[in-house]
Image (cartoon, rainbow, N blue to C red):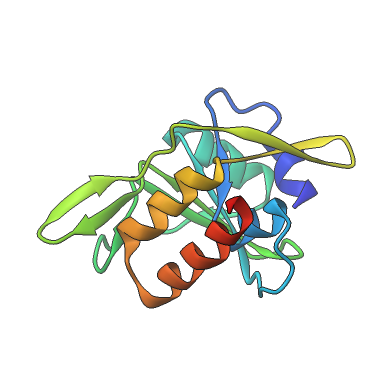
Length: 144
């Protein structure tokens, strides 16, 4: 994850690590983190992908999610997926995915930004998949 923080130092807009990687940064240890999900602005997404030797991938905009910019950096120690202007399907509508909070977590003096746990819980509830609802339970235990 440090590589993401180092590559993101020069981004112009706020960015966040979310998903399972953020849950690990919150301190949860009993989970598998297959990738690092990053949400940022479109210009920053392209810059971050370039810095991580990743590539923009065409987003079909089908299923539950779509992004204005989506890309992967598969040659990192953990796959990094970068999204900009992410939206999620809510019934027949597309809703923007955005966080209202941002807090740093430092690893070796490198800042990694995550949303507040409550913000993350709201996102998982919006997604509504069984795996997301299970994550809600894990996160709620952290703030109980």
